[in-house]
Image (cartoon, rainbow, N blue to C red; front, side, top):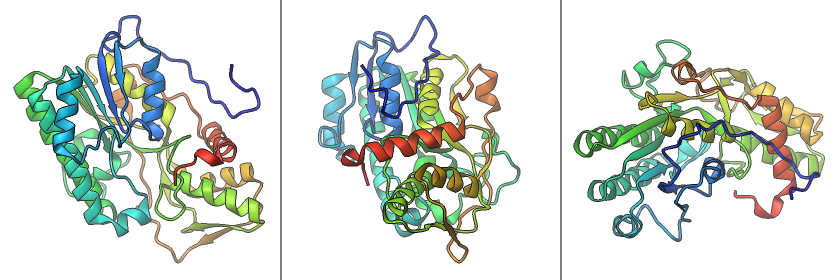
Length: 331
């Protein structure tokens, strides 16, 4: 029984009555992350025959031999590949080589194993950071994805993620594997990595607001708050992954987003309200990255998918979860 005093955000599944995932042997990589945990919760409702959700200690995807051995032993027929080395704006700027090295290795090893032990369906978690910059138009649409190079601040991570599309296309042609390359917008939610210095914007703000509240200090935020981003709660992102696996036509490139631009100032003030922080200092001398980024999701909506978690509700839940789970926080 759930504790009624604990933060909860219940989103009912909208899965079809006949499911490709039911009865499958499904591997979810990155299953301990913000998105991975939400995916495991979603597909847990489906009655998969076997769900593999290994920790990094159980499966190190940077080890090619270990990765091939895992697939040879367990033979999944569905792979949802979420594992990655991920940073926020500051972290990406400081770790360009690490990002491209580690993410390229992770992807090459899983695809190399898949080439020897083919699967029926593969979902790859791509990133909006891979879109070419400067942007030609807004919101960003899938047909623009390969029309230039990504922003310099996220270049290493973005290029490693983009390169994966080549593997997927060739494996599909040579093995008959169906795949979806999901282009994710900024995700957030419980079980995220709440890294104040190198993490993504929402978990970083949540951690800083909690600390500011505890010590009675102002909340300090990079930039003037005017930058806008497209944010999607992990529960909606997980629903979208399952939807893509189940829906004919949700193949190859597809944006997964809220489709709405929200300012960093609005995000900050909502989190500050939850933390009961009254004073916010916007540090206008700090970098803000891309000024505005919103991602078109009309392709997925046309197939019948709709996000359900409103941004204010999602932020409130995320802050409450963080405040209630200090022992289990990843930083």
